[in-house]
Amino acid sequence: MIKIIHFSDLHFGSGERYGPINPETGLNKRFEDFICALDKPVNFAIENKADLVIFTGDTYKHATPEPIYQKEFAKRIKKLSLNKIPMILLVGNHDILYRVDGSDALDIYDTLAVDGVTVFNKIELKNIETKNGSVQVIALPHITKSRLLTREEYRDLSSKEQDKLMIEKVKHAISSKVEQLDPLLPTILLGHGTIETAQFSSEQDLSIGKVLSYPLSFFQNQKFNYVGFGHIHRHQILQEREPLILYAGSLERVDFGEEKEDKGFIYLELEKDKISHKFISTNPRKFITISCDLTNSLNPQIDLETEVLKKKEPNAIVRIRYKIDESCLHLIDQKKIKDLLTDVFALTIQSEIVSKERTYRILDLNSNLITTPLIALEKYLFEYSEEEKTILLEKAKQLIDSL
Ligand SMILES: [Mn+2]
Image (cartoon, rainbow, N blue to C red; front, side, top):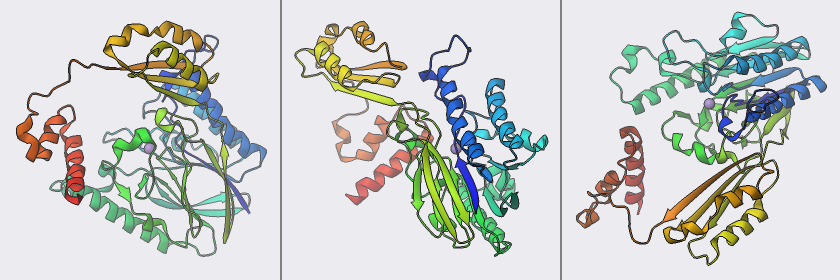
């Protein structure tokens, strides 16, 4: 039996706007949360004498991390290496610098040839030796156009056609690796990217339709014992068996889009024809949104305070959102609200002011457009980029057509 720990989407440096500086360490306290979260799979692997640790990408917020982020990550890699636990590092989109040199934030571990560490930055099949036998790994790191296609191939294609071509190429690449598999060894496929049937965290939703996504059928191959993915922060199991296909999810909550999701890592026990899996929570810091519609309230301050006291929890990251009529705005004392929440970790207060007198108008949006809703929508979307507009209009057209 081979014991495997799989975690993903570490994102050191992300979400720090929710953290104050710890005066004792000089570090953002949210970053300290992320370090604690990383310690959980690392320590679990050591305590349980794991045979292999897998990380499926997005190490930092971006590919040029501050030295402190690199240092804290490297410490954990070294700890696993000293404990003789092999480790796989798969490159995610946040690890890649979009330049022609093709380098990424994980390259350094390959360059230094850290004992037991294998970095995957291209589609590849490799045998990884563990103390309980070899595992075959097909790696599908984040795919970029420049790494997969030649200029001649993509020059005359629309971005949709380029995506299609890339998906085709990935399909071929995976099939050719599958042909080379040794039927006697356990096989895992590790990826960083979007699988069509997966669900995003709510604040990640906007990237749907923009990124290329793989059909689930690419991975429904009985020659695989496990398909483990990174990229989508929401932990989810796409398929329970033959093979087990899942997203490990991120280790900590990056933003409020992940408020309702538990966070953790995956513990796997792999035998040639059997696999068991368990999600182990990192007990991430709580995010709490307190929403309050005060537009019909006679005592907005009291109503808001009541709601806040009902929902708040110590040490949580709290977001208060209240909706109030402009004429009642002066009845809210935000200072008093803050005083009720001195024991929370971080606090933001957002107000939405509703005005009865004025309604916001876009000049071009007038009653003449009532018969052409798509044109009306286009005018309404003036704040969006051309690319986003195109996506939204396409979706709207589908909706209108289906009605
Ligand atoms: Mn990613």
